[in-house]
Image (cartoon, rainbow, N blue to C red; front, side, top):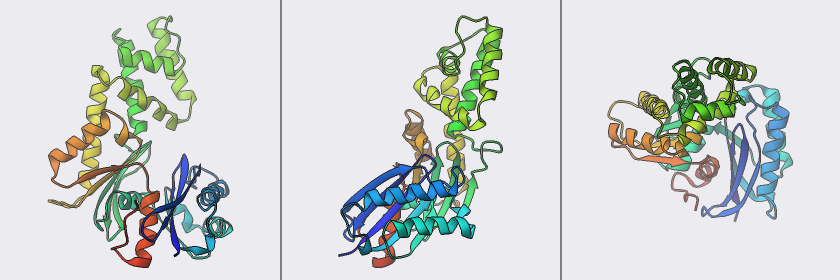
Length: 310
């Protein structure tokens, strides 16, 4: 019996999963990030190869009958030179069948449900919602990046945390969230308020803008603090609005959630409750798209009744 391969290539890690045609796991591998927009394409392709080699260890790679790569930044593969790097990485790992590339949203949605239609909401460093029809992405809402949008994302939470700390310093009302933000930025706590404020602004502006996402865990860790609670409330509302905007009116198709914030308490739980209050559609949270990518590969061989990954 042959088998199928699914890969989930994100900005920080790449995961490969090998399944037999009954949906049972045969192998798995992990490597570094493989988004060709955030890594040099040759590095990203090499990480795909490494994850594949690890997943296929001890297996006959020639028996791979279908493979799907769910990728953040998949649009980069419209460049023939970049596409060739990933095709070579696939071939060098041993499979002889073609590799199909889909978006990470399509792979994540397939991980969460066998339904051909629905919505996937990505809430990680950035944020975006996508409409899926017949297992393919047909439209998106949001996803404009840190400069133009990404409301409710980890970047957005981190920026709001720093802003809340600056306001707290201005008003001489420093709370536990502000203390945590100042510590994360390396600002000494024994400085006068005015100096701490200046040092915080300087520290944040000295780093890459996306580094603000590193402050996001401070918000959920201090959720009981009123300033953090306000940020979480606004994030939940923004993310739910994003998902709703991607859906037709009165849509009852599934909603799949993916991304680091989906699993961050209490934000993730509040997001699920908010969505449940707005729609009767089932809401499922997943941790990645490798299983969905493998299932999509299996459907190319067995049709939509292909066994779900076990």
